[in-house]
Every structure is written in structure tokens, then in C-alpha cells.
Length: 276
DNA sequence: CCTTAGACCTGGAGGC
DNA sequence: TGCCTCCAGGTCTAAG
Image 1 (cartoon, chains in turn purple, brown, green):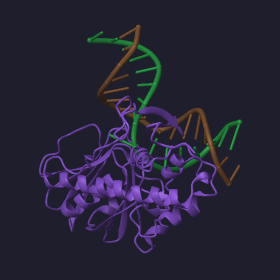
Image 2: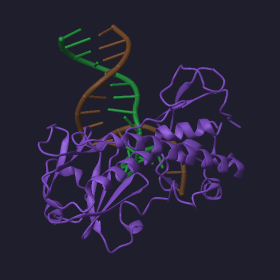
Image 3: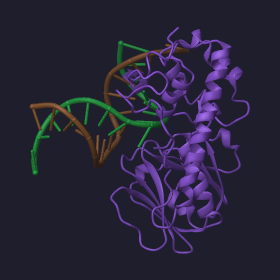
């Protein structure tokens, strides 16, 4: 589920639940979840650390502890759950952090694609291994039409691939890339070099609208977050094309088409989204 | 340099 | 019901 907005919802929720909580034990059930680039020994170094601050960069969670940064990527299906007493057991829970107050923070990941690791707190965040290849985050001021145009104008690849390229803009995933192309009335297969400055300004404008609205919608589900099931970014925004194959386009009524672009499922309205 | 196929994993949906 | 194939929020690596 997690693209940038869902990760933001998760970070906000974790910040509420875990601020200054102390880790007293870590049960690493599936060791491959820990990145090879992590400082070791992972479980031992976490003991005694407190969660101090919480942020998101692209699709990464950055949890700052007393002495380290714990960086997590949820990939396709990673989720965090917090249990007050007993864990609701599952074979998909791969890491359990026991907190001093008795709560358990569980990392759940059906496909085991997610990764987490410990990194230096001294180094600037952007220089840490998992983050240094990222471009501007989608919420940054400097991430504007000019920036996007400068990045993608020279590229031969198509618009969809550029939106998914985390070294250009960090935080956009497949669902939102489809929605952004639809709202900008642009065919995802357009070559980047054919896009004007005006197109790029429009793309960024729609991108910020869609992603920020998604965060707000996710934010509404935070409130009914209770204790047992916890912290999963619930994607509640109204999608216009993603997953809507065969349904009428909200603009013109023509059936939404599904194609493959860059090995990813891509939904579009052939009438509304111009190819150039 | 760039694009693309494959790998990493599991489970749900749909066809037969 | 069972078996098979395809597909899914992502990213990295090797091959072409």
C-alpha cells in the first residue's frame, strides 16, 4: 500500500504512538528484513534506545533514536502494528520491538520485500546510504515545474517512468503516477523530451494536489486508530483511473484502458490524455 | 548511457 | 475443490 502519502500517514501515526518510547527487546524473526548496509548487531544496538523523532523522505521512514537512525522501507506490503498486550500472531510478523511499557511494535510484511536498518546519526540524513540516491521529496518547495523540466527534458524515457524514478522526485508510486498523468491530461507514454515547461508545471501542480489530498484522507483514518490494529496507511482517496479498467472516464465517459508501460500496470483514458 | 528482464516473496483472483 | 497462471503498492541487479 505504501507510496509517499501512505508512508506520511504511517510516520505521523508512529510519532503519536511512540514518541520517547524505549525499546527493551527486539525479536528478529526473519533476519533478511535487516538491510545489508545496516550497522550491526541490529537487535543488540536497539536495546535501550528511545524513539526521538519521526520523518519521511520519499517512501522511506526515518525514525531517529538516541544514537542511530532506524530507516525503513515498506516496499509493497510492509505495515507496522502496535499491540498493547498480546500480539495477534501471524507468520508475516518479522520483527517485534518490545517497549518498556509492555507494548509491542510489530513489523508485518506478507511478501517480505520491506527492509530496515540502522545508520549513523552524525551523518546528514540525505547522505545515508538508502537515501542518497533520492531526488527532491514531493513535498519540498524546490520540487517545482522548473525543477522537473530541468530533470526530465533531456531524458529519452517516458513520462510514467520519470514519475516513478525516485532519483527525480521521491515519493510517487504506480497508483499516483497513473492519477497524475490523468489529471494533467497527458498520456503516460509521452517522451519526456516532448514535454514543455508548461506541461511540467501542470504535472507538479497536479502531483502536489493529489498527494497532499491523499495524506489528508489517510489522516482521517488515523483518528479511529485504536490499540489493537495499528499503523497502516489506509488509502481512502477517490481514484479516477487506477484499477478502473472498463469503467467510464470521469471526464468524458469513454472506457478506461489498461496497458503496460515499463512493466507496470497503467490505466488511462485514451481520449482525455493527449499523446502529442 | 539507457532500457529491459529477472529476482526477491506471498496470496488472491480467475480460468479450466 | 484443486491446479495453474497472472497479477499486485517497489527497487535492485544483470544483461542486452
